Image (cartoon, rainbow, N blue to C red; front, side):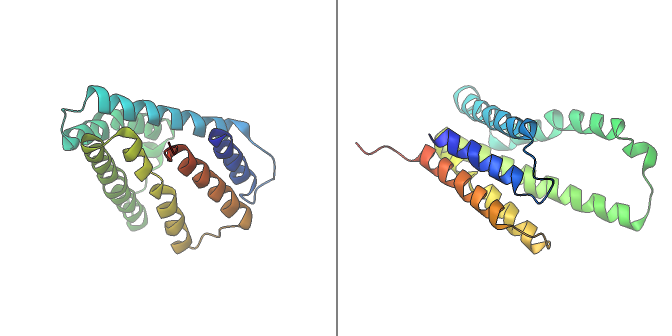
Length: 169
């Protein structure tokens, strides 16, 4: 039941973006696949890599796992060919670097630390805060949040909270 509420909420979000109004199933399926991969990663780290310190784990993931795919994407997109050295592009690269280090890197390290001292279920519960923070950043940046997007987000968060709640015995 909770899975379907998350799927239904993702469909509402896909429709409520102010675009053409057509449902694109591939991005929704990719989102669900990413969620499955996150669950596999979390349980694997807890069961097999619990003795590795959080700083080492996040440094490895950040340096090796993310670096190669990032370089491939930059090369294939023509970034190095089309890059212009000016104040605007350097400022943009600085913001991307800050976001990657402080947003992704620090969050990854805290997530691995939380995994080392708690259960995978509790550690994944903390990730419920990420969409809320992303929405706040978007609003601060001037993006508009529609009523349909709000309803979709509430359905997804309610489904995730329901999935994580303990059944009463």
